[in-house]
Length: 273
Image (cartoon, rainbow, N blue to C red):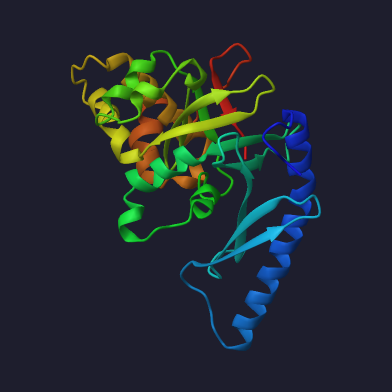
């Protein structure tokens, strides 16, 4: 069972072990759902969702989110998060990634970060969406996120007067760019990741526009950093962007056939799915 005092190795080991069970359960649920849909004559043309809470043999609590769309070649996909009681009695949400790479890793997303996600995307005004659902959607399916060593922590304070900007410290010295927004947090000694707070994609886009338009701003350096990360995100996630957006930004700035590489000495990390 994962508890807050576990080592990183222990946490990762249990997440990997659990994930095999989680994947099997997701497949059984999906097969049953699609069989029922076929028997009823239903064809799913718009995304449908199901969610399940489970407890594994290691006594870890998971939430599984399954999405269905029979217009896709693969008619279903799943995402999952492991919910663990943190040091301050609030939950932490673990996402295991990189299972098809040489070095699997986990991302720990705090309750605070997920609440900020819900608030800043105004999801709480629509309905009180459970945090485990938001945790499952931190990343798009098969998304490569971009992590960059944060140059100036004061950059956060420009984002629409963030009410928790003053809470940032040296342990939140990395910025993480995903398709659904920007997180701030840290990289652990064993190269796992902790997401501690969040700003929405809408809140961060103003500085991208400033850079694109060559508009003078005292945050030019920081805006340029996000702009660079944005291009890297497009490069490693071309399937998430339509052709017009790729041509407008990525191809217009670096060329369509340019190959980008990340060296071991770079301050930028690629977070493989």
